[in-house]
Length: 255
Length: 301
Image 1: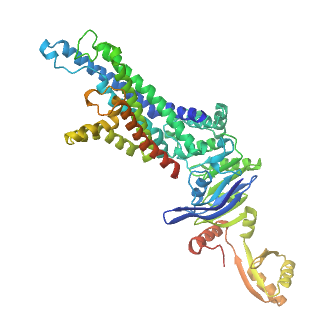
Image 2 (image 1 turned 180 degrees about the vertical axis):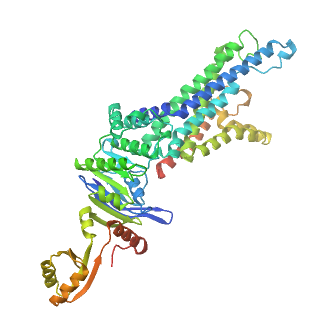
Image 3 (image 1 turned 60 degrees about the vertical axis):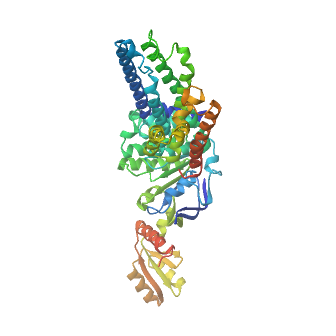
């Protein structure tokens, strides 16, 4: 517990965490603004045009940002200590490496689970308020109760990506390397998958980290390739690879 | 108490630390001397469990470092001044370390006061000068009132007043029975701080000595080897010289080489050697370490 308290103190007091929280807030406000514009445009449309509109679901622009920002936060918990050399001071205070990694993991997971769910639910509430009294397709669901599974899944997605970022931090030890790899995995890989032959594109895309949480909660719709259990297994495999590899690197390399 | 036994560390082909063994005893300041790249920092990192030795072992208070529960209560270390997160305030850096070892916030304020950083405790480390970081690192080392202290090049970046302060601090800690190991590449610095020195070069122990013996050994004197040492000693003593034993003959102080030659002639004593030795401690140290680099031996001619 004492090491968890120590890691939490660092995470919530360090300047970069506050910057990331501020960025998250700006993305939420900006996306709500976009949603508001979409609804206003919809209000001025003819009945024929209204049918072809996209849903004003604020979560669609916000969640990829949330995944990225919490992934960066998780990677920084590790890489900022390596880049500055602080990891050596930390290890002098906590020489048991398993204990240190586990404590950081608990803090990162706690922050990402709470943060991910908070952001996901804020987007749902904002969407609900903006589209109130309007029908589908501009309103993505009839009542908030219909959006529970989708929203929980989005929050889980944020926590999952944060763990991937955490593992990458231990593996790469450098902020720049972790950010580039995360950008590749989150934004570039889905595009590359899109250009694969048709019978490859779907399974590859479904296996990418960004698309697994939706399948886990059964909210991925027609794009789903994996059953919830299979999606959970693929997620576990990703974490075993990245966090497990990170642990081995930390355990056996010199600090 | 720090015990290092047959410690070896290789980086690729280069052997940074080569079967190094020594013991650091409590109650005195032990200087860990060697030129840059001699393996001082690598040895300290292995003692603290940061680097894994290829062979050998290091023990602190009788245990491998990672077997010490809440180690800041027993061991304090000042590593390079950069070993802290620039985005944290000084006080938060110390609080995080204190929490990890269940030390109270009162200790944080005490050590901040002791190193003179109370007024800047809420400022971020990123804006600190090298000297301020060094003081903060020392505060972290003192946090748990440890009985063992390791300082890696603590005077780096400190101003003259700061250098004097850290010197007095180390001497005061050793005087209360604590174990203090301090590394430096400057003999002149150790001369003022350490009671005991370990000199290493190329990862090997070249010399271990008390500071007093080292100063004695290297003071300005004349090395004399005589066919009849007993007669020579009495003749030199009679003339006002002070004679001390030396592995290669006798060491004479208080008389010049010329004068010794005249005395020997007058007494009919054959001299085999008559060598004035005027090396300062710093010169001797440079010679010792240069030999280690070139020939891996501590023998002098």
